[in-house]
Length: 111
Image (cartoon, rainbow, N blue to C red):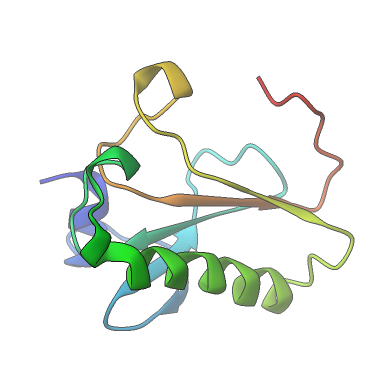
């Protein structure tokens, strides 16, 4: 069971900012920006590589949740949405998730 599955099951506390039957969004415990929210599907998909065509609606929903949470958290000057896929990309939890980062200037390229 990943840390995200434990958060979803309420076995580990998290500062939740949004939730419905498909996904949950909460503040990252090791933020890389003043606002760093993780948007996690409740369906355990290890990484983007493992998503199927049947996950298309869920994947789209994750981006719409990022948009809505960004608006709620007043990230009007801009924000970044990131999905890491695999260890070389910096993925640390094998459960697909979207990073929403904002409230500071973000450099490019990111890594």
